[in-house]
Length: 279
Image 1 (cartoon, helix red, strand yellow):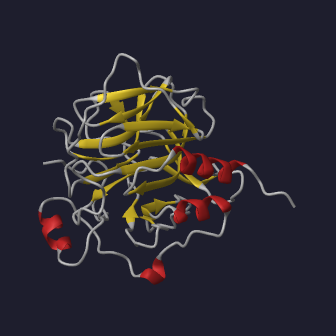
Image 2 (cartoon, one colour; image 1 turned 90 degrees about the vertical axis):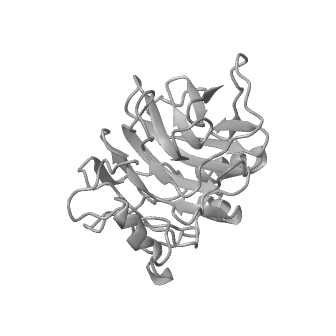
Protein backbone atom coordinates (compact mmCIF):
# COMPACT_ATOMS: atom_id res chain seq x y z
CA UNK A 1 0.00 0.00 0.00
CA UNK A 2 1.24 3.45 -0.84
CA UNK A 3 1.58 5.56 2.26
CA UNK A 4 0.99 9.24 2.75
CA UNK A 5 4.25 11.14 2.63
CA UNK A 6 3.18 14.70 3.37
CA UNK A 7 -0.01 14.75 5.38
CA UNK A 8 0.31 16.13 8.88
CA UNK A 9 -2.01 15.26 11.79
CA UNK A 10 -5.39 16.78 11.11
CA UNK A 11 -4.63 17.39 7.44
CA UNK A 12 -6.80 15.25 5.18
CA UNK A 13 -5.74 14.41 1.64
CA UNK A 14 -8.48 15.35 -0.77
CA UNK A 15 -9.42 13.10 -3.64
CA UNK A 16 -11.21 12.65 -6.92
CA UNK A 17 -13.96 10.87 -5.03
CA UNK A 18 -17.72 10.83 -4.67
CA UNK A 19 -19.91 10.12 -1.66
CA UNK A 20 -19.34 6.95 0.34
CA UNK A 21 -15.90 6.39 -1.15
CA UNK A 22 -14.59 8.78 1.49
CA UNK A 23 -15.04 6.37 4.38
CA UNK A 24 -13.53 3.44 2.52
CA UNK A 25 -10.53 5.44 1.41
CA UNK A 26 -9.90 6.89 4.86
CA UNK A 27 -10.06 3.41 6.31
CA UNK A 28 -7.34 2.34 3.89
CA UNK A 29 -5.03 5.08 5.12
CA UNK A 30 -5.68 7.58 2.34
CA UNK A 31 -7.94 10.33 3.65
CA UNK A 32 -10.12 12.00 1.05
CA UNK A 33 -12.79 14.63 0.59
CA UNK A 34 -15.97 14.54 -1.44
CA UNK A 35 -16.38 16.68 -4.51
CA UNK A 36 -16.73 20.30 -3.50
CA UNK A 37 -20.08 21.91 -4.37
CA UNK A 38 -19.93 23.78 -7.65
CA UNK A 39 -20.34 27.13 -5.89
CA UNK A 40 -16.87 26.63 -4.38
CA UNK A 41 -15.07 25.94 -7.65
CA UNK A 42 -12.40 28.36 -8.81
CA UNK A 43 -13.71 29.25 -12.25
CA UNK A 44 -11.11 29.89 -14.90
CA UNK A 45 -10.97 33.51 -15.89
CA UNK A 46 -11.74 34.54 -19.44
CA UNK A 47 -8.08 34.70 -20.41
CA UNK A 48 -7.03 33.41 -23.81
CA UNK A 49 -5.10 30.52 -22.27
CA UNK A 50 -7.85 29.34 -19.92
CA UNK A 51 -10.35 29.60 -22.77
CA UNK A 52 -8.13 27.45 -25.02
CA UNK A 53 -7.67 24.82 -22.31
CA UNK A 54 -11.38 24.62 -21.48
CA UNK A 55 -12.27 24.36 -25.18
CA UNK A 56 -10.37 21.04 -25.25
CA UNK A 57 -12.43 19.59 -22.37
CA UNK A 58 -9.92 18.75 -19.63
CA UNK A 59 -10.84 16.18 -16.99
CA UNK A 60 -9.10 18.34 -14.39
CA UNK A 61 -7.57 21.81 -14.63
CA UNK A 62 -5.57 22.99 -11.64
CA UNK A 63 -4.52 26.61 -12.12
CA UNK A 64 -2.50 26.54 -8.86
CA UNK A 65 -3.29 30.19 -8.22
CA UNK A 66 -4.52 29.83 -4.64
CA UNK A 67 -3.12 32.00 -1.86
CA UNK A 68 -3.76 29.05 0.53
CA UNK A 69 -5.29 30.98 3.40
CA UNK A 70 -4.97 27.89 5.57
CA UNK A 71 -7.41 25.72 3.62
CA UNK A 72 -4.79 23.99 1.42
CA UNK A 73 -7.52 23.45 -1.19
CA UNK A 74 -6.38 23.00 -4.79
CA UNK A 75 -9.37 24.04 -6.85
CA UNK A 76 -10.36 22.49 -10.17
CA UNK A 77 -11.33 24.92 -12.92
CA UNK A 78 -12.43 22.24 -15.41
CA UNK A 79 -16.05 22.37 -14.29
CA UNK A 80 -15.85 18.79 -12.96
CA UNK A 81 -15.12 20.00 -9.43
CA UNK A 82 -12.37 17.51 -8.57
CA UNK A 83 -10.93 19.48 -5.67
CA UNK A 84 -7.50 18.43 -4.47
CA UNK A 85 -5.45 19.37 -1.46
CA UNK A 86 -1.98 20.83 -1.28
CA UNK A 87 0.83 19.43 0.80
CA UNK A 88 0.79 20.45 4.44
CA UNK A 89 4.49 19.76 4.93
CA UNK A 90 5.68 23.36 4.64
CA UNK A 91 7.43 22.89 1.28
CA UNK A 92 5.18 25.21 -0.70
CA UNK A 93 5.17 28.93 -1.42
CA UNK A 94 1.91 30.25 -2.84
CA UNK A 95 1.07 33.25 -5.02
CA UNK A 96 4.34 33.21 -6.94
CA UNK A 97 4.33 34.97 -10.34
CA UNK A 98 2.64 32.71 -12.87
CA UNK A 99 3.85 31.23 -16.12
CA UNK A 100 1.49 33.03 -18.47
CA UNK A 101 2.28 36.34 -20.11
CA UNK A 102 -1.38 36.84 -20.94
CA UNK A 103 -2.85 36.08 -17.50
CA UNK A 104 -2.15 37.40 -13.99
CA UNK A 105 -3.06 34.10 -12.29
CA UNK A 106 -0.30 33.02 -9.90
CA UNK A 107 1.61 29.75 -9.44
CA UNK A 108 2.95 27.57 -6.64
CA UNK A 109 6.59 26.78 -5.88
CA UNK A 110 7.99 23.75 -4.04
CA UNK A 111 11.29 23.46 -2.17
CA UNK A 112 11.24 19.68 -2.77
CA UNK A 113 11.27 16.63 -0.45
CA UNK A 114 7.46 16.45 -0.55
CA UNK A 115 4.77 16.56 -3.25
CA UNK A 116 2.88 19.68 -4.22
CA UNK A 117 -0.16 17.45 -3.86
CA UNK A 118 -0.97 13.74 -3.75
CA UNK A 119 -4.51 12.42 -3.55
CA UNK A 120 -6.75 9.56 -4.61
CA UNK A 121 -8.69 9.04 -7.84
CA UNK A 122 -11.09 6.47 -6.39
CA UNK A 123 -13.71 6.99 -9.11
CA UNK A 124 -11.22 6.31 -11.93
CA UNK A 125 -11.85 9.73 -13.45
CA UNK A 126 -8.33 9.82 -14.85
CA UNK A 127 -7.50 7.86 -18.03
CA UNK A 128 -6.52 4.28 -17.29
CA UNK A 129 -5.73 1.09 -19.15
CA UNK A 130 -4.66 1.96 -22.67
CA UNK A 131 -7.01 4.93 -23.01
CA UNK A 132 -5.91 8.10 -24.76
CA UNK A 133 -4.74 10.98 -22.59
CA UNK A 134 -2.74 14.22 -22.39
CA UNK A 135 -0.89 15.75 -19.46
CA UNK A 136 0.06 19.41 -19.75
CA UNK A 137 1.78 21.72 -17.27
CA UNK A 138 3.98 24.80 -17.04
CA UNK A 139 7.26 24.16 -15.25
CA UNK A 140 10.13 26.29 -13.96
CA UNK A 141 13.08 24.36 -12.56
CA UNK A 142 15.33 25.35 -9.67
CA UNK A 143 17.21 22.04 -9.77
CA UNK A 144 19.32 21.01 -12.75
CA UNK A 145 20.85 17.94 -11.10
CA UNK A 146 17.82 15.69 -10.69
CA UNK A 147 15.09 14.21 -12.86
CA UNK A 148 11.91 15.92 -11.67
CA UNK A 149 8.42 14.48 -11.51
CA UNK A 150 5.67 16.90 -12.52
CA UNK A 151 2.37 15.02 -12.87
CA UNK A 152 1.50 11.32 -12.90
CA UNK A 153 -0.72 8.50 -11.64
CA UNK A 154 -0.99 4.70 -11.68
CA UNK A 155 1.00 2.05 -9.84
CA UNK A 156 4.59 0.88 -9.72
CA UNK A 157 4.14 -2.17 -11.92
CA UNK A 158 5.31 -2.75 -15.48
CA UNK A 159 3.68 -0.17 -17.80
CA UNK A 160 1.01 0.54 -15.13
CA UNK A 161 1.59 4.28 -14.66
CA UNK A 162 1.70 7.43 -16.75
CA UNK A 163 3.66 10.53 -15.90
CA UNK A 164 5.12 13.79 -17.22
CA UNK A 165 8.78 13.99 -16.19
CA UNK A 166 11.44 16.64 -16.92
CA UNK A 167 15.22 16.58 -16.77
CA UNK A 168 18.04 18.86 -17.85
CA UNK A 169 17.98 17.65 -21.44
CA UNK A 170 14.72 15.89 -22.09
CA UNK A 171 11.00 15.49 -21.45
CA UNK A 172 9.93 11.98 -20.50
CA UNK A 173 6.89 9.75 -20.46
CA UNK A 174 7.27 7.46 -17.46
CA UNK A 175 5.03 4.38 -17.55
CA UNK A 176 6.59 2.66 -14.48
CA UNK A 177 9.52 0.30 -14.96
CA UNK A 178 10.10 2.09 -18.22
CA UNK A 179 10.53 5.67 -19.39
CA UNK A 180 10.81 7.20 -22.84
CA UNK A 181 13.05 10.16 -23.56
CA UNK A 182 12.22 13.00 -25.92
CA UNK A 183 15.05 15.41 -26.62
CA UNK A 184 14.14 18.78 -25.14
CA UNK A 185 15.39 22.21 -26.02
CA UNK A 186 15.98 23.52 -22.51
CA UNK A 187 13.28 22.24 -20.12
CA UNK A 188 15.54 22.77 -17.08
CA UNK A 189 16.65 26.31 -17.97
CA UNK A 190 15.11 27.96 -14.93
CA UNK A 191 12.55 29.72 -17.13
CA UNK A 192 8.89 28.82 -17.53
CA UNK A 193 8.22 26.13 -20.13
CA UNK A 194 5.03 24.55 -21.37
CA UNK A 195 5.48 20.76 -21.31
CA UNK A 196 3.00 18.15 -22.50
CA UNK A 197 2.91 14.41 -23.14
CA UNK A 198 0.21 12.45 -24.94
CA UNK A 199 -0.81 8.84 -25.52
CA UNK A 200 -3.28 7.98 -28.30
CA UNK A 201 -3.65 4.24 -27.69
CA UNK A 202 -0.70 3.22 -29.84
CA UNK A 203 2.05 5.80 -29.41
CA UNK A 204 3.26 8.60 -27.16
CA UNK A 205 4.45 12.11 -28.00
CA UNK A 206 6.05 14.96 -26.07
CA UNK A 207 6.07 18.71 -26.54
CA UNK A 208 7.99 21.69 -25.21
CA UNK A 209 6.77 25.26 -25.73
CA UNK A 210 4.31 24.22 -28.39
CA UNK A 211 6.81 22.20 -30.43
CA UNK A 212 6.89 18.41 -30.90
CA UNK A 213 10.03 16.68 -29.59
CA UNK A 214 11.81 13.70 -31.12
CA UNK A 215 11.96 10.36 -29.33
CA UNK A 216 15.41 9.01 -28.53
CA UNK A 217 16.32 6.99 -31.66
CA UNK A 218 17.49 4.08 -29.50
CA UNK A 219 14.05 3.65 -27.93
CA UNK A 220 10.82 2.12 -29.15
CA UNK A 221 7.51 2.91 -27.49
CA UNK A 222 5.33 -0.02 -26.41
CA UNK A 223 2.23 -0.74 -28.46
CA UNK A 224 0.00 -0.56 -25.38
CA UNK A 225 0.14 0.58 -21.77
CA UNK A 226 -2.05 -0.46 -18.85
CA UNK A 227 -2.33 2.39 -16.36
CA UNK A 228 -3.86 1.26 -13.07
CA UNK A 229 -7.28 2.83 -12.35
CA UNK A 230 -8.37 4.31 -9.03
CA UNK A 231 -4.81 5.17 -8.03
CA UNK A 232 -3.09 8.22 -6.55
CA UNK A 233 -2.56 11.38 -8.57
CA UNK A 234 0.88 12.86 -7.90
CA UNK A 235 1.56 16.53 -8.60
CA UNK A 236 5.18 17.54 -8.16
CA UNK A 237 6.21 14.00 -7.21
CA UNK A 238 6.22 10.34 -8.25
CA UNK A 239 5.38 7.00 -6.63
CA UNK A 240 9.04 6.18 -5.96
CA UNK A 241 12.32 8.06 -6.00
CA UNK A 242 14.62 5.57 -7.70
CA UNK A 243 14.94 7.94 -10.67
CA UNK A 244 12.35 10.70 -10.34
CA UNK A 245 12.63 13.28 -7.58
CA UNK A 246 10.04 15.62 -6.04
CA UNK A 247 9.87 18.91 -7.89
CA UNK A 248 12.13 21.75 -6.82
CA UNK A 249 10.76 24.79 -8.60
CA UNK A 250 7.52 26.24 -9.88
CA UNK A 251 4.45 24.58 -11.36
CA UNK A 252 1.43 26.19 -12.97
CA UNK A 253 -1.65 25.43 -15.08
CA UNK A 254 -1.82 21.62 -14.71
CA UNK A 255 -4.40 19.98 -16.97
CA UNK A 256 -5.23 16.36 -17.80
CA UNK A 257 -7.40 15.33 -20.75
CA UNK A 258 -9.12 12.14 -21.85
CA UNK A 259 -7.89 12.58 -25.41
CA UNK A 260 -4.50 12.85 -27.08
CA UNK A 261 -4.36 16.53 -27.99
CA UNK A 262 -2.97 17.23 -31.43
CA UNK A 263 0.19 19.21 -32.11
CA UNK A 264 -2.06 22.02 -33.36
CA UNK A 265 -4.02 22.13 -30.10
CA UNK A 266 -0.91 22.13 -27.92
CA UNK A 267 0.68 24.85 -30.03
CA UNK A 268 -2.52 26.90 -29.75
CA UNK A 269 -2.32 26.66 -25.95
CA UNK A 270 1.27 27.91 -26.01
CA UNK A 271 0.45 30.82 -28.29
CA UNK A 272 -2.54 31.76 -26.13
CA UNK A 273 -0.21 31.90 -23.12
CA UNK A 274 2.56 33.92 -24.71
CA UNK A 275 1.08 36.19 -27.36
CA UNK A 276 -0.76 39.19 -25.99
CA UNK A 277 -3.59 40.32 -28.27
CA UNK A 278 -3.07 43.51 -30.19
CA UNK A 279 -4.97 46.52 -28.79
